[in-house]
Length: 596
Image 1: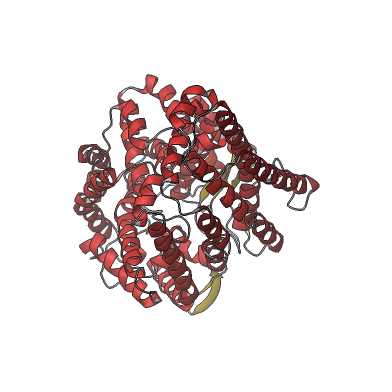
Image 2: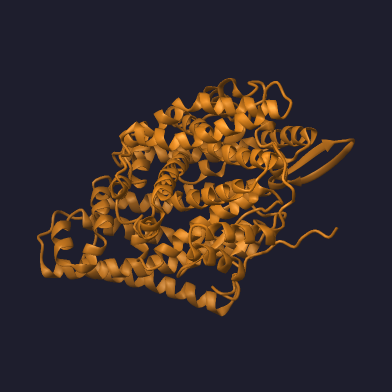
């Protein structure tokens, strides 16, 4: 049987190639925008200063700077997203790496402009600006956020230096991790044979139905992480050390405070959500124990977490996956269904696993209402679900397309809203006509996701908090990080997993630690907020649809609680989060009943 050809995305609608004249011209226009902003900021005196009296000249300077800022952000988005797509698909692409490095080299200048503009906003009367300027009124949330940010700034020279050093420190370590981890090869010994495969392919074997294959891949993966742990631990130490230092210098104290501010939520909301999640751990352990029973095991090990349970009557081809998602989306709306087909027809999706390609999946907005979806497809329902999830992100980008770049800036918490919603649509579509074995398979996949963003995310949050606290005093060894990870997993998975077979190198395997700070709890927020919205849709579908698209178009316009108020949700109340988790509990009950 000939292997199915999986799609690679079409990037030519953006630029013909990385070395095309069109790309070169776009970079030149980007440079020109940066230079023009620097000149105009100098002319208008836009930089951190003492409080300024409100005048027409100040308003005109503010409006001009805001308009320029949106223009610059749009140029930056297109170039960075386009170039990053090439690096993500092949970390060995030297041209793409060089182009990305060149673009990153402009970040200190942009960082300096951000520092100047933010500091200046801190000195003006933003309420007068918002009241007198239609442009400012349209950007009121972003402006008020910058006003708060101004109170958490170091001096302008310090902020500029921090941005410049980030090119050689934090951002460099993040790039290093992505490039280094994607090139790690894993040597697997099984059935008397030895094979060496990319890490992404080895990790995909966690879904293999053969337990011997899963076990061999698990041990080989751990061996590979162990062999490469030293430089990865160095990246972790450097990134978290810099994060701690800058948070203190800027007056945030705990980096979590800065992360919550960026995510448009507060500590009370986080505590309510995390508390509800912890109270659901016994239910997830019921799922783990039922899954062990379904697999004929006394207890799950880490390499059994993603073992398939139940059976499907088919292996999913790529065309079948796209068709099923489009038809499932049609149950919600024709608009969403047409969008799914458009994404496939216009070549927005790269689904083929191959050497040099990073693990995982993501969606990035790239120009106008276009996105690009990155995934490593395998013929399982899990990949169908992943496709629906990433297309949810892309649909969110469509809803944001008529907003300015500043209005589109969606925090991670709200960025998961559409993806979870779309994933839930497809899960329910698949369950509708499924027999017992297919129901088990679908519910198993859904509960893997739910437990991943509830139980495992909590373990990752605990790990990051602990590392942050310890990193204040000194660097941590790779072995210490393994111990912290193991303790966090014991605390969260409890007796649901074999304590002698956890994944102590999860800190090395998860790219989230090497990008944004606390890139973990937003996934939980997204799941539970998305389920809360889905429950509302089920109660009253017709009026929900238009309101939902409007919500997605507004995720950069207000904080999470203000947006939730549209639907009567109180995010600071444990009751909201418990109600969303009840959706998951019903899936667990159904799974346990089917296992018997």
